[in-house]
Length: 93
Image (cartoon, rainbow, N blue to C red; front, top):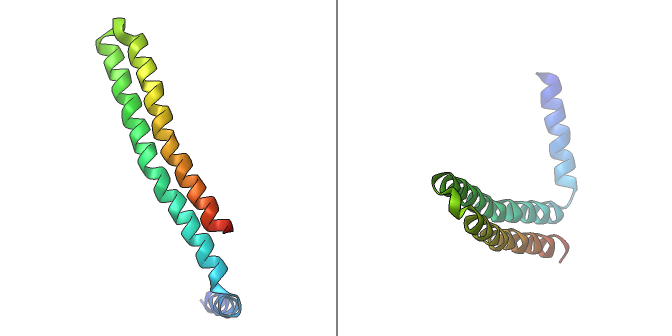
């Protein structure tokens, strides 16, 4: 237990000695991109799941459903790319 307390005390001293601005910027940028990726990932998962379900119910419409699914994936993925651009702006601006 003393070793853990000593390591924690050393980490606290190092954290106090360094600037927190860079760390908070990196944390904010990472958090922004992480949150921006949640929505598109849920959207794409739902989209593909429903498309597969639709193709299983009506195999004759599979071509049209597949085309529409890929368009939906592209538009949804654009949201993730916008989040990545915001991440880069927060990180390096």
